[in-house]
Image (cartoon, rainbow, N blue to C red; front, side, top):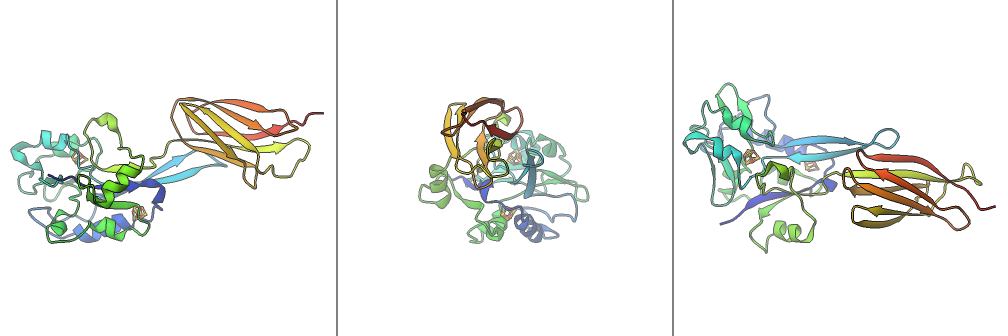
Length: 279
Ligand code: SF4
Ligand code: SF4
């Protein structure tokens, strides 16, 4: 047995969409039956690059989450398909049979990740195949992985401890998208965007001058972190949990310390925090 899959490092994704375009180039109007039928011109996003906006002006952030089929181990698409129209191969790849799946629109609706698309002309559901047709001919990786210029996509066998993907997964803090779907996706992620807290430190007695190198601490959610304000007086804590209480502390000798209580229902910009000098 094997588990061929992807490890996606969101922190390395630039949003260039090369992976999406390579996928379109591979599948548009190309028939790889019995792996996949030709992809139509519109409405198919087998490798979707989702944009995630966080925060707000003047400190917004934009992240990109490449989202292919998650190659689930408890795949709802397999469970719902009649006549074994969706199946898992011995290497872990989940495929939709283009012939057996004809007319089975329920397969589209069964996928909680919304990565199955309806081909209206052929009346079949379609999705990412991890380029199984190419792998079976000896290709080392799917087209999307080949096309990624930043190394954000890593392909391989998670069950082979010598593979790059297994080594990376062991060395990184990996997560899955939407574990609450309970589908056991094998596609792993690093750096899924979470909450952040930002702010700017200013000293009352030196207006107009950036407060660089000020110690800022954060406590809460089992974390104890420390950072320093940068050349603009700005500081940032990333990767924080949602809906959690945190305490941000700012300390500088000769100034009154500041403590700010923060709840991360949203990303938080504390704005200007003014340090008052001792008289
Ligand atoms: S992500 Fe959707 S289509 Fe892919 S295996 Fe899971 S349920 Fe099936
Ligand atoms: S090709 Fe790589 S960097 Fe570009 S959008 Fe896809 S995953 Fe991100």
